[in-house]
Length: 442
Image 1: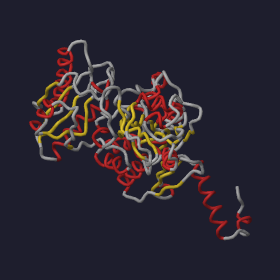
Image 2: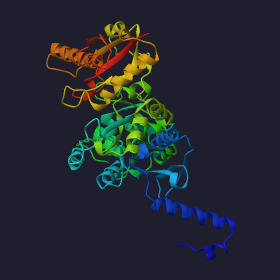
Image 3: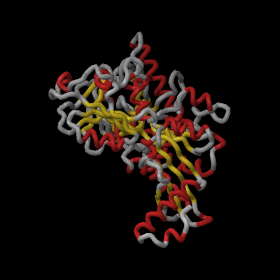
Image 4: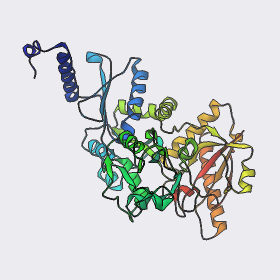
């Protein structure tokens, strides 16, 4: 401890710096009312914004932000002395959040990827991490593929992305760009962003080339790509900053650029969900309150403000290109599309946890905009099947399943139809092809 008599000989500036250091040490060693550990994508900006909004709503007070002395950590607090509420957000990567939750250090695990089977199993004696009580989708993100603004490339396939980042393609001229050696920028191994990229792009067939520069921070990676005409990297959508964003295609599906509609509906091939995980009925009151705030209207408005994609539905009139069949254009000519897709748990017929929340969001949308269930139309889609009729039946059954679920939530007689295996948004076999879109009359 620094003694008072040693402070007397210091200049005013030095005393202020020492005082700030002592405060940081005290805060870092003090217990917090809530601790959120995990993803840098979630923790850098989004989680602090959600915590601030929740604490302001809870107390009516002004929230202050400080540090712990460690990078990528923030303390948000409100009140004074015995009435002070303190929340720690430590953003060191999704895997670190799992360990902190498992060891009892964190109340909430922030993750930019789903919980892995081994993690679910490790926590299974305390909670079912795949249940609605434990798994909370707080935002939708698009994995942004970034290049320098001067790069003439505008779209890439997932296959070519894998070849680039594995080192098989080493020069931009091989892709129709300038004669320039490619420089790789990637997130570090603890990052959920890296896990997502590794899973969706590299898969089991490719490995990241050893020349790639690795980063803990999305923003720093993006800034460095924006300064390097030969660079290519990936980050969360909220960290595009001054870099150029590429459109991405999956197999024979058309290339899509991440935007409000393509990411919110998860049609964009590198879209992903951002999560907060809790231990079911062991979740503390404050952690539960923050989760409910994050999932609600005000929390999702903050999600949009942070640069990610809100789950509050909005109506959009899509711009159809030449790949969209005339019959589909006619079917939807008097409709706009809501920025929500209903999806099913992998390999199952039941709606997944996000879809269960989206049922309520659609109901709230109709109430806010003074619309009725008669204004809605559900369109189901299926992945390619051995027979066209089978695909049509699957797509209609999916749409019927969502219509039935909406009925149970008080929305009666919502119209539905199926569009079979046409208009895929992913390669054959992609679970994203099996979806139910929501359309609303103009």
